[in-house]
Amino acid sequence: MTIGLTPNPVLRGALTVRAVIFSLILLLTGPSVAKSLTPEQKVAIDSAVGRILKSSDVPSASIAIVTDGKLDYAQAYGDQRLDGTAATTTARYPIASISKQFTAAAILLLAEDGKLSLDDKVAKYLPTLTGADTITIPELLGHTSGIRDFWPQDYPFEAMTKPIEPGAILDHWARAPLDYAPGSKWQYSNTGYTAAGMIVESVAKEPLHRFEQRRLFQPLGMDVVLGATGLSKTDARGTTRYALGPVRPAAGDGAGWAFAAGDLAMAPSELAKWNIARLTRVGLKPGSWQLQETNVAPADAGLKYGLGVAIDAIGEHQRIRHNGAWTAYLSSNRVYPADRAAITVFINAGFSNSQDAIADAIEAVVFNDADDT
Image (cartoon, rainbow, N blue to C red; front, side, top):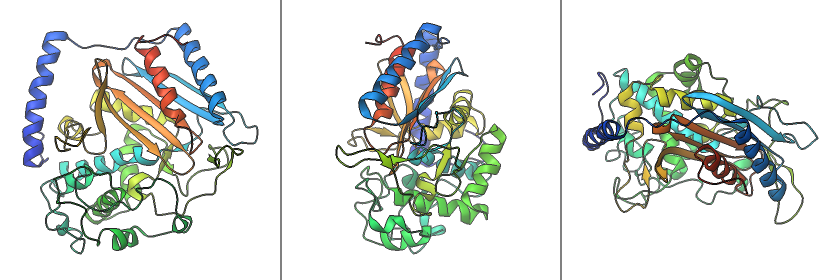
C-alpha cells in the first residue's frame, strides 16, 4: 500500500483482491495494446462523426484518441459557435461530471499528503450536514452517502440561472433527511461532490480549482479553466433545442452550481493528457489510481463505480469511463487500461446523446469490432 495513503478498510480488501486478479491476468495473457490508427481508420472515424452530426443536428464535435499510451488523433468537426466558426481541436468545452474524477483525485492527493484519511467521517469537516457522523469521504465520492442530489432531473430549473455559493447548496439539500443509510445503496449525488469539494478547500486551505491547478493540471501541462466563468469567444458555444425546433445558443448557467461536481472545461487533447497519466500511473501514486478504479457500489447497484469513475467493459476491453452532461454540452471519456487506449468526445449540444454514438463508433474502429457502415 502506498505510504501516506490510509484507505477505507472495505476498499483496502477490495484493492488487494483486485490487484491479485489483475496480476494473474497479466501473467497469463500479457498486455494488450491498441495499435496506432491507420489512415483508413481515421477516414472511417471522420465519416462516422460527420454522419452522426448531420443526423442529430449537433453543431460540432471534438475528439481525441489515445493508442499505445500516446495521443494518436485529435480532430474537430462542424460549427463550434453556431455562427459559421469552423471547429478547432484547441477549443474548450465544459466537461460537466467528468470533472468528478478530478475532485476525487484532489481528495486522494490530500490523503497521500497525510492531511486527511479516507476513513474520516464527513463530520470532521462539515459537522452540520445530515448524517455527517456516519458518512465517510469515499461514500461522498462513490455516490453511496445517501445525500440528496440537487439535480436529479438533469434539466435546468429557474434557480440555476443565478449564481450560488456551494455552501448554500449544502444548506438546502444536504441538511434534508438522507435518502438511505450511508453505504447501503448507490444513487448519483452532485450534492455529495459539492461537499467533497468543500472538504478539499477546508483541508488544503485554498480554492478547489487553485489546488487542482497546482497539484494536477500544471504538473501534467493541462490547460483547464472553469466552465462557468473561464470560457472565451474562441471556445465552443453551448446550444439547445426544444422538441424539433431550431438549434439555438443556450443561456449560461449561474456560477457555483457545478463547482466540484462538474465545473471544468478543456479541449479533448487536454483531457487526453489525464487519460495518459491514468494509463502510466503518474500524477497520483499507483495506489491512489487503483483506489479510484476500485468498485465501491453495493452488489445490487446494477453497476460498478469507483471514486468519480464508472467501471465496466466492452467485450474483452475493460473501461474506466464517465460521461458529462450539463445544460448545453455533452461529453464522453473512456479509458481502456489493458489496451493503453482512450477515447474522448465533446459536443456543444445539450441534446441527442451524440457524444455516446460517436464514442461507440470510434470504439468499434479502434478495436476493429465493426466496420463503418
